[in-house]
Length: 413
Image (cartoon, rainbow, N blue to C red; front, top):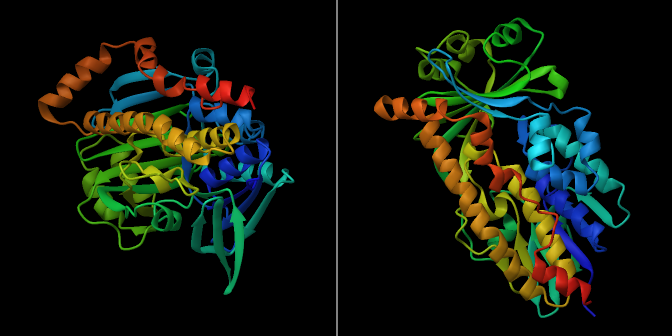
């Protein structure tokens, strides 16, 4: 009889979602995190209905809603004069259309909600300060070697899941290694208090009940409320030939000020007044390399396909990956090769489409000259209902439901 043990490397959003999903399917889960402590870190995150549907299914959404914000709309404006170009209705309209809410939150609040849910599962064991050192693959599963401060322990399992991010160790051990590459884009991140002088000034240009995107040929800025509206999350995405020396290092506000020169107030003042900014190089993992090994290894989230953030779907794709993988393995526990092959076959077309949507958004938001004029005309000519309909394939997707062939297989077990 095959093992019912799952080993997951990485206790971020992808790993915690996977742990809960596997436990919900009756598996025993060992979740290993390299960091010594799961800290309250990160910045804002957009959680679209395709992701909140997963969170609701796993019993996480209720806690998250207590600190998240449900925006009324996504509004796109041009940064020079703040003219509105487009508006996608959200709020109750998102729930009516896509069957789940659209939320914005602090990433740490999402992580905490997932962690609290995982800790309530008796079949999940979370170990911090644990580094995946090696893995041995054999016909009936995998044996992972876990380094606990120099003390190496072995963990036998049916499946080793790599949820360990862009620099995935599992990817290098269990599939053909595809090292991450710098995308040519960087993210400047800051969070400001909504009730402070800068926050009050920004509220004149960015309402507290919306996600607002400011488009400019040199950058685009995304702003939205987090933590119940008490803070504003700011992220500026710029083209940058060279990556920052260290992810999260302090960015020079004068560099950002030059990029944002000529935009409307208060955006033109934002670079200096919202400091300190943290600077994050955006790295990619091309989705074309293998995500699974038939010998019992699977990658999810950024470990499999780190995408640029222009579609705001990184966390959502990780959560979709996690629950679909867990459900497929549960449907075919004695056919692990077939389950992993099916996982890749189901996920690749969707990831490719999300990747293409991100490229389109970048093209539209960073357009200049005649292309920007055409963009403005096209967007202004489209109603909110039309814009929302274009996102039905993305936000209306239900990752919690098995495709029909797998449903039939499970019923026959």
